[in-house]
Image: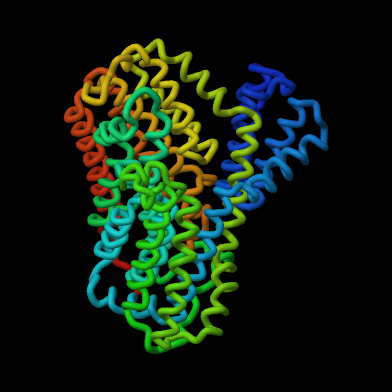
Length: 550
């Protein structure tokens, strides 16, 4: 009976939500109403309950198509046009999306090459000698994620590929590895002034120097900072809670997956015994260098544009594709010159690498299509209208913006789209405060706090959402079942989000970064130490009055 409880609860929630939608508006007026949020709710709920992501996403897409067809009175023809032509075909044909898919496939090929050459095996053996503990392996994963701060996609896939042999050696579950990757990638990128995220944020602000405003928001970006602190604490203390605890306990017994993912093949066995650590380190360095170079190239760096401006104007998709393809050619030549792989072995790695990335490509394609459905139903304008109606209570505005950003990012799976919608609303609300502010004048604290709340909420929702690109990339990098990754990291993300909510409530009254950030840090650490004490008590051996039976 218990296995049906979650399904019945989900059905009841959807039924209540549909009733609320009907109360607000008939389905003929679904566009720009509460109906626009139903498709992602269906998709995300089904994924978490059924543990099957492909059918869940597709049902969510069909739900969006059906609502759009009913709202536009276009019937089945309109539904299939929205789902197939405007959704699947348009997203696969979108240049930016194609660039990301090319980068995915090329990275998969490079990973297979490094495995075949024996570089991953050699690095795993080296790491097992120098990294002595699970805490060391976790911290090494975190530090590598911090170093690769230029782009979250690049971060997730590279860190996962490099650290998998190390975390496997120390019996860290794939779900935990996926969390470490995901909890580092976006939070680091959103507080790094030189990153694709900084460029995206600065591009949404009008009337003020975007990069300068972005730098001012960093101390108030509570979710990013507190998530990084939580990763360090969990890595050092070994405290786990929620579903992650079971995954880690199973990993300690040798089961790294708990529920085995059949979509990810085992790592390719080395074809050559001469593989050395350099056969993993050098290809990764080549990949990083050429991808950064590719991003700078697309931003006009080689045409006289400054380094920072080039990053602000770069096309991350094109730059990553360009850099990864160039890196692949250099790496193939390197392995052939080292005589660890033949030309035929290198060419055999191409279909093998593509095969490894098929799950990520499928999930990404469905996730992009679901976002298209929410776009056709105008979920963004609907949510922005709700925010504008709440601006009368300025003291509570940081908390309101944080909560709305979480909901919008979680439902749509895009943090960039979320702050792209909300930040212009904030600047409009505070237009009088910003008027006349020059590059040398101090930006009003409330403006900085509210924009920080938008960014923090967008990253939080993106971090939790099963249809988020970054979440999908983290699962792919760790080669972890996607639903396992989402379900295990939700309690961690919600813990930090709860602390951030208190912090932004405080920020509305006390606009002082030391009080807000300091108070939030103290509250988070108090909760984590409390969880550690509770965990220790539960794991403590129990005394027995009666002797055990032999």
